[in-house]
Length: 110
Length: 124
Image (tube, rainbow over all chains, first blue to last red; front, top):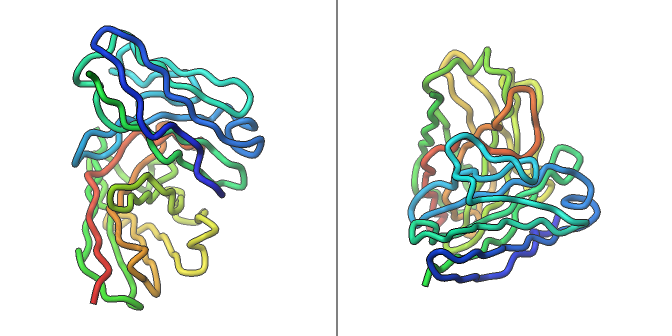
């Protein structure tokens, strides 16, 4: 089980849009529509913002959206706000009742 | 609203056994019908899934890299989930989180509820 590949860092200005990619394999991201994304602020627990590739839990703004193509999933944050700054992790079901996370991407809002 | 709270020793010596508990409040673990997970985060690093256990305690899945050292159990009388990791090394130093799947009877890596995490340091 190898970690999913994410860019180490991304950045954008307030109001802009940013997209974070998450590349897996045909055994995880490419095989299942069970990709989730988590936002984590320093010293805090992760918070789910996307599940099932593109579904948002209640309370998550619609500025956050998810998609998938082949073995790559993406998280797009539109209308960037300063409070969006933090770390973002993708996660995928990987078969055989196992889960794999991405290494995380640090979002900086300039 | 269900809440999770991890607890543990904070410091464990190399080669010893790490034992952590996750207390569940705001709902009964026994009747929940959810999959519960342990996830850890090494210092300044990403997240690593450790394993799953079902509410009844009779179904348990583990990360293959930890399988030989890991046990996860449920104590419905105490409404808590426990983790035991044997023969720890410095590589097991991490913040340990317990989490719950978003939907009942569903195992889809959608961790909708998280505890605040507990830091464990392995050092002599």
